Length: 98
Image (cartoon, rainbow, N blue to C red):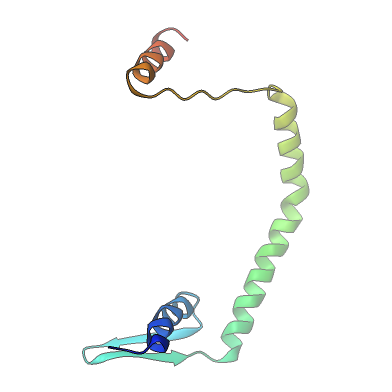
């Protein structure tokens, strides 16, 4: 059995692999992990910053659209949940009458 450190290291290595901070080499005799150069981390951070800036620049337009939708929407809404036979009856009524 592996030590507790090994049990924690493998999930962490997989996470880092998904984030492209390490390369995972799976071979027939085992798996090896290779750290990426620091420039990869710098690139990933700059990419995240670029995406955040894009979202930030679109925020006024999105806020405006949401405000318009809110003004057009009813001030109150009600969500009812029906289960079992009552739910089937209500669904059938909604499909045929409402």
